[in-house]
Length: 143
Image (cartoon, rainbow, N blue to C red; front, side, top):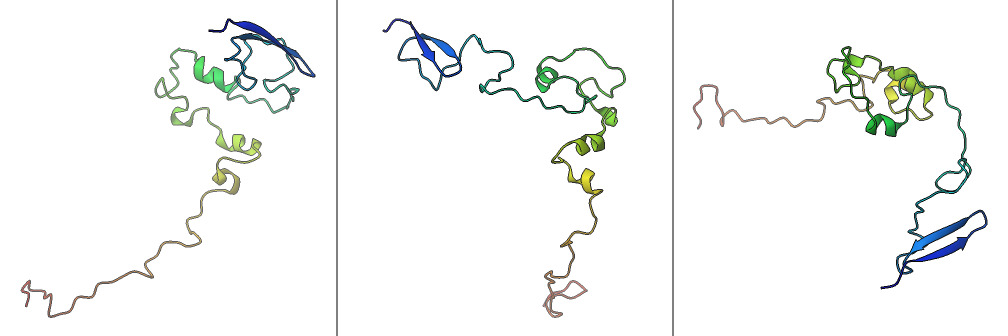
């Protein structure tokens, strides 16, 4: 087997050191173990764009922290401990949907769903089975 080597790659913006066997090293599969880029760069090596959004009181932390770094404690105000919005406590859907550019719920944008659809279901074009009188009689005797 080939011995692990260190390969130096220079780009216009940075210099990378790839460590490993030459057969394992690929420009498309390389993931550096240490990042020496300045902190204002993102994973895709482009400048980070700072987007100012209104502060959300409902979820002050990121999605990752909410899912994987849960605070394990008992909240006696919730209906059950594993329900975050039991009985819609702390859930303000309308104000959250107004902040989004594309709303998740169309009912919060346009009001409640209409009871009359454009093609509402009616019984105008249904099949009705007419049975002849000699086949079925009301007294239960068939001919």
